[in-house]
Image 1 (cartoon, rainbow over the protein chains, first blue to last red):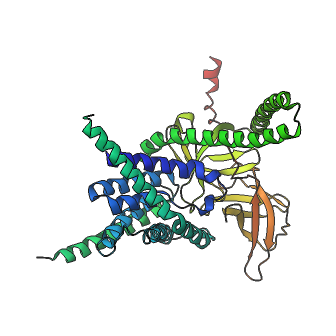
Image 2 (image 1 turned 30 degrees about the vertical axis):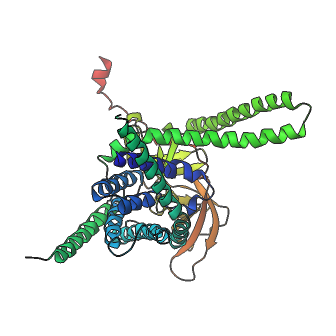
Length: 171
Length: 283
C-alpha cells in the first residue's frame, strides 16, 4: 500500500520535473526531485519498500532521459547503499542533517553523470558550464531538500492514518 | 569461512565493477537502450501530454488575465462591453497566432520535397546534462530513429529513439549533437555542436575562411541526416586562433528552444518504385 502511494508521488514528481518545471524561470535551480523521495524511502522505510522504489524511479528516469541507460538506476541504488550505511552511524532523521543528505544525493547523481562521460571515452561530452549548475543545484537542494523530505514525512503520516482508519472500519 | 564484514566489502566491490561496466557499455552506445522502456514511456507519455497542454493553457490564461485586468481598469464605464470584446479578441489572437504558426509550417512544407509530420512537444529531458524533448509522434506515425526535426525557423534536432506514439529528440544545443554545416556567405564548412543552453559552436572551420558576425549557418547535407540548406543559426562571435588550423566560431541558433511548442519531423520521400521493363509496361 505504502509502496503504491509513493510510486504515485514519484510519478507525479517526474511529471512535474519533465513537463511543468521547464516552463518556470527558476528551472535551472531545480534538481532531480526524485532524489529527496528516494532518500526518504531509504531513510524511513524498510528495504523491501525502498529497494523497489529506487529501482522503479531509476528505470523511469533512465527511460525519459536521452542519456546513457543506467545512470539514474546507479545513482538511486548507490543512494540506497550509502543511506543504509550512514544510518548505522548517524541519526538520519535529524532535521539539521537532512538538507545535507539531499545535497549529497544531488552531488552523487552529478558524479555519476561525470563518471559516465569519462567512461564513454569521447563518445559523450560534458557541457562546459556543468560545474556552475552543479553548484546551483546543490545549493538549491540544500535550501529546499529538507522541505521536500518533511513534506513526504507529513504525507506518509496522513496516508498511514487514513489507511488505519479504513482498516478499523473494515473497508 | 568469511566474516560478514568481508562479504559486504566483496559485495560492494562487485557492485562497483558491475556499475562501471554497465555505464561504460551504455555510455558507448551513445543513447539509451530501448526495450521495456517503451512500455514505460507509453504509460507516462499521455500524462506528460496532458500536463504540457495544461501548462500552456494556464500560461495563456495567466497572460490574458493581466491583459484583461489592465483593460478593465482603464476603461471603467465600458468595462463590461470591452471586457467581453477583449476576451473575444484574445481568443481570436490566440487562434490567429496558431494560424500564423501553422501557416508558416505549411509554407515551409511546400518549399521542400520531403514530407513533414507535425508533432507537439510533451516533455523535456529530466537531466540538465542532456538537451532533449519528447514529442507525441512515434513509430506508428512513421517516425524513425535518425530523422531530422525542424521548425520553420531552423533545425531543432534529431530523433534518437522512437516508441509507438512517442519519440525522443536530441536538440542541436546538446553537447553530443553534431550537424555538418556551411556558412552561407563564405561557404566555409564545419560541424555544429551544442555549447550551452542557447548557443552552439561551429567546429573545424579553417582559419583561412573569413567569417563575420551575422553570417548565416545552414546545413550542408553531407552528414546524411539533415537535408542541405536548412537554417541553423547566425554567427554571433568569431574568435580567431593564434595557432592551429581552425578558428572558433560561436552560433546563436534561430530556434528558440525554450518557447518551442510544435515541431516538424522530416520524413524522406519513399524510394521511387523500380522501373518496369518496357515490354511489361506496354502490355
